[in-house]
Length: 377
Ligand SMILES: [Zn+2]
Ligand SMILES: [Zn+2]
Image 1 (cartoon, rainbow, N blue to C red):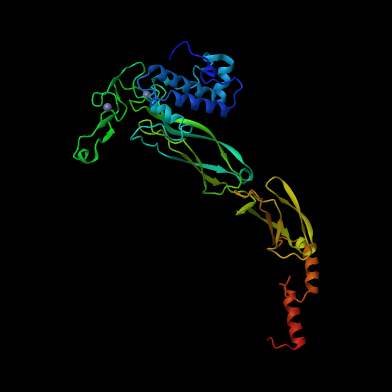
Image 2 (image 1 turned 30 degrees about the vertical axis):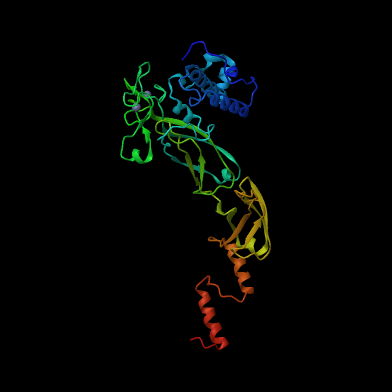
């Protein structure tokens, strides 16, 4: 890296209060202006191109930008900066792949592998747009060699096969028919240079498993098994190819009260048989707190009460579903003497058979049957 660096705002010709979009636009213009394809064998353009990439890396990252604003270039030591001066064009293009629309030129560049990660959400998370912080390990550029694979400070030597062009003309029978057939150089794999001393940290691979922390926006109303794709957060591509994508698969944690039915939430609510028979106001849980449901007199077990708009938002229309409260009438399992007496008195008013309370009951029953002359013997 050069020691006397230019001011990053100056490099990108933007004001100190420039917004993210302006910075992105300006960097794109700089990068296209000093693009290696338009400036063949122009070291000045190459330096400008790399300088712009470095400026963009800092000014597009709120944390790095703040450090730079506060402390200047010195504030960025140890901020995880890429060493662009030692990076190949293709690596730079793939880093800012989204800006260059996946382009950047070059043949035989392989897109990096896609990665999958599982994201666990609560139903309360599903109710609103959330930003989820993910932490995962992925294969990433080696910082020690900036992804180049060469030991820091070591030289690369020009590839003897392609003389640094990264491409070779294939001499096959087809060239008679097809004219020139150009492919990526097999010796340097299109890099144009060979590593003399491999980077000891990544053993010349240019990449290492690294921890990545990423904030991912998850839209409200998402369903279990759906995935949010984050472009360019997969593994880096081969030979400076674009990064793959990260797919965040959604898992939804069980809720103590609610079951999800599309955008509706179903809550099974136990009520006592006296509440069911006489009517009651009962408190029910909602996703955000509590609500009251009026149970009318004579409510049957299994009856559903609908509370409009207390469900989950639809992922497309964002219209909220309902909360459905299904009451389950519970029969008491232990009765006090008084309660039992009252219930028996009640049972007497019904034309229903109930189990006896004592042995004496059977005797009464016998008398009753014989007295009535029924045919039960
Ligand atoms: Zn390395
Ligand atoms: Zn070569």
